[in-house]
Image 1: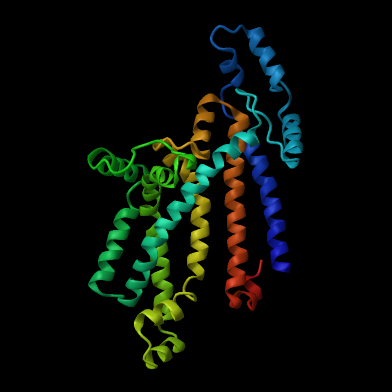
Image 2 (image 1 turned 45 degrees about the vertical axis):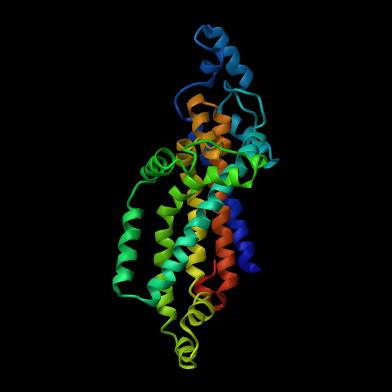
Length: 318
């Protein structure tokens, strides 16, 4: 429990630091939302009145203290443009981003698990090298190129999947799932390689352990040795990498949601930057960064629980 409390305390401190950096970063950006709200015909007096109404005429330190006080109460402020609570706007977009990340990671695991197990079992063979080279080839492709290639092949040429757009679950599971296949595959085809390589490396090491040799000597079939005896102890690093990827993909969702017109957090962030709706920008960046930190903390704690060796190594604690 001491380890968990240390992680939670670190999470709170990092969260406060992230909140401060987010506020400062957004507020030093050039441009003024009052100009957009006022429009081209607004006089300087009108612009100043809008700035005063929004509180933008106050000192940045005063605004930060006020913003932080509201933040600690769960209030992220209101959109400068629509007047809606920022938290409400984000929560309406969050399910789309979460669904995209979950499906993309499932696709990545579906590719990485069999490939990693097979490459470990047949390490050094032609097929091991072929899968590794193919993996690195897809990994080196930028994610937006992968997305555009997918749209061209599966939407324009084959007409199997929609090129862009989002269908809510109210229109049925399949309609909703189809709108995520191309975006999720674009992410998965980049991310599966790292998972496969990590699993392959750990599994090769595990397959050389004495208890694995004993299991083989007992005559157990290879699939049983691989899946029942070697996969679990080889998956600790995989869990860590998977968690880190999910956190990192919160930022990567900006590109994919923009290309595929998915109404998630990433697209909301891009639109808010163009509109200079700083309160929404602050909320989105804060959510993405805090999400990244929270997921990493959860992975650390899970890793600590899964691998008993960590608990016996004081140097690794904390």
